[in-house]
Image 1: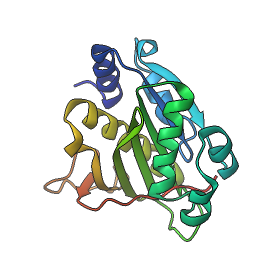
Image 2: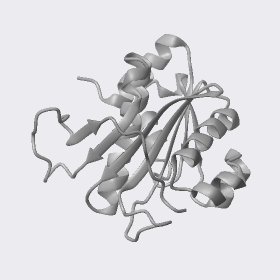
Image 3: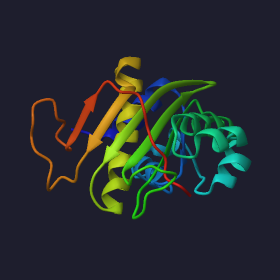
Image 4: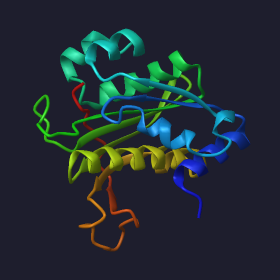
Length: 198
C-alpha cells in the first residue's frame, strides 16, 4: 500500500493541483515527507517554517490579535497559518502545524498538544487537535503522520474526514484496539487543537 504522502502526491497530480505547508513544531518535516515521493515536484511547491510568533505574523500574515488573544497554540493560529501559507506559496492546498513538542509546556498547554489546519484556496476546510504521547521526536513524527492523513482524507474522502480530534501514542506502546488505526491513532468528534511555541 502506498504511503499517505504518496497518496497525497498522486491525488494532487491527478487533479492538477498544488500543495505547500506552513509549519511550526514540525520544522519542515511535513514538506520533507511529501518531497520524498518520486514525482513530487509536479505538485509540491514548498514550505514556510514559521517557528517564532513574529515570523508567523510577518511571513504568514497571522494577525497579531490572533496571537495576543488566542496564542500560537490555538485553532485560530493554525487556520491563519494555513490561509497565509496558501497565499504566500501560491498553492491550492496548504496544511499548517502548530503545537507543543516539549520538553516543557507552552502557553499553558501540555506537551503533546497540537493543532492542524488545512486550507483550500481562501477557505479553511479542515482542522484537527492532536493529543500526542511520547518524546519530542514521537510528537513531531505523530504530527507529520496526522497532517498527511488530514490532507489525504480531504483529497480522497471529502470533508467528513477532515475534522476531529486525534490521539497518538508511540508505536511501541500503542494497543490494537477497535477503531484504532494501525499507526496507533484514535479519533473522536472534538474539534480542538494546540500549537507549539516557536
